[in-house]
Image (cartoon, rainbow, N blue to C red; front, side, top):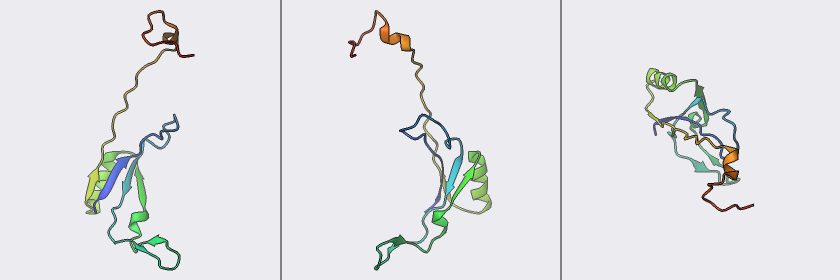
Length: 101
């Protein structure tokens, strides 16, 4: 499988943007996974699949993949749409929706 280059999305349950500005490079799975018969744990002989490399820009991650001759796919993040909201609009006289409190 090719490597994956992406930017982590904002956590849904949090308002902060920490960790969302870095680009992540993940190696693809190159060896099949197998289940341990005694413990039931899933394992693999592919240690690269456990690595995540962080880059400050997408171009740096692409340059690394090209320099190391690694097939890759870039996943562009969806742009956030910020709708400005004003608290005073809750009390406007021309409010369309019913008051719910």
